[in-house]
Amino acid sequence: MIKIEHLYKTYHADDPERRHEALKDINLTIDDGEVYGIIGESGAGKSTLVRNINLLERPTEGTIVIDGKDVTDYKGKQLLDLRKNIGMIFQHFSLFAQRTVLGNVMFPMEVQGKKKDEAEKRALELLDMVGLADRAENYPSQLSGGQQQRVAIARALANEPTIMLCDEATSALDTMTTKQILKLLHRVNKELGVTIVLITHSMTVAEAICDRVAVIENGSIVEEGPTKEVFANPQSHMARALLGLEDVDEDGRPVGELDEFDAEMSREFAAPHAASAAEGKAE
Amino acid sequence: MDFNAFFAQYGALLAQGTWDTIVMTVLSTLFAYVLGIPLGVLVTITADDGLWPHKACNRILGWIVNIGRSIPFIILLVAIIPFTRFVVGTSLGVPGAIVPLVVSAAPFVARMVEQSLREIDGSLIEAAQSMGASTWQIVWKVYLKESVPSLVRGASIVFITLFGYAAMAGTVGAGGLGDIAIRYGYQRYQTDVMIVTIIILIVLVQIVQSIGDVTARKLDKRNR
Ligand SMILES: Nc1ncnc2c1ncn2[C@@H]1O[C@H](COP(=O)(O)OP(=O)(O)OP(=O)(O)O)[C@@H](O)[C@H]1O
Ligand SMILES: [Mg+2]
Image (cartoon, rainbow over all chains, first blue to last red):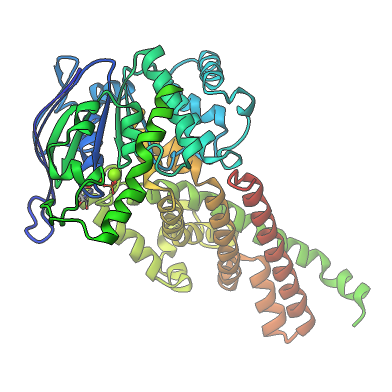
């Protein structure tokens, strides 16, 4: 279980000109085995929030509790061990270009000091699971985006984490490939029991895979709950805006009626989510 | 010009000179990298946005590198003669040239290394961090490993620069091609010796550059 309590993150706290409160009083509980979505506009603080979970970013205030342990101040060996338990995948895959696919998947085991032959065996199993066993000796530049993300997923699973963080993992991919990746993440969640925290700005993605979602706006959570409920009956302006139901200004305040252009845009962007989300679930 | 007579007279001299120049350059490039890589890595990771931010350390290293970079080689060469004597016992010949070559090249190498490392995308460093890699492992397995092609390209530039410096060192007692060009070509007006020396230098530089380019391309797995 991941428990985030009164989390604040302020960048450049001591420089009044650059000071930026990226997160404000975030409280969240993510249960074991669920797929938790974090949705919001660009710059809302989604990445910052997720990066506080594996302490790539340090909270300015507040605590991060994982499996009952307060990890907020973890350093050194403790921190490295914590991260071993939390896999992460990224929007642009972040594979090591000078290593083969196999070398990439072995990397996390290599840094944990696992024996080479054991690491290789496990890496090949993982590649088999993501359907890329035959590409083990290729380099990332020889793979498509979707294949690269599958390698990244295999790599993130190498040390048998119980949590996986996905930062816009499908944002650089087309619809078909996005579906494949979501299907794979769904399997990772169901078959391996990995808790998934998934950032997305796509309602389609959120609806397809998330059990619960939090809507974040200007560094605060404005709505939270089971995906179905939030989607069926959005309470916050931001959630309604993300669903294309109304428009908001920069501060998230409603701007009243949609004009014709906005309404059209909203339909264009929001309409496919229901249909394709259903497909995504069916798979 | 009678080639046979020319080579009978100067062949051995030029061969020895070429060999000395190559030895000077290769050894000083190697030693310069032994010093320059750690220096470059430290400058990179101690930067404010680095893996291991450390203001004081970064400033001091930056100064050292800049001072080293700002002294023209020919001045450094004579200025550190006492130091050179202290390290290798002489300021003459190949050993006497290697010390100033290394001292002047190490800061240059540090900057080249820093530049190569900075090309590495920050998200790769984060990915490695998220997998629980230590700072040392990230330096070794991500920064250095991922920048190998770029480092090789940098090394051929360093090598060629040192080649030129080695020729300069030749003018103050280091031997090698520079020495030959000055003594025969300049002081005794033997234009043919001067020309041949220059041709040898040009050919060697071309060879090194080509080897560097081909190696870097071969090593770079980003090329399909
Ligand atoms: N290292 C940093 N230094 C200063 N400000 C930062 C830093 N990282 C993020 N920010 C700021 O914090 C805010 C939240 O950034 P964050 O990356 O978390 O947004 P996001 O919701 O992930 O956006 P996107 O969807 O575009 O990725 C932004 O205004 C951003 O400019
Ligand atoms: Mg982001």
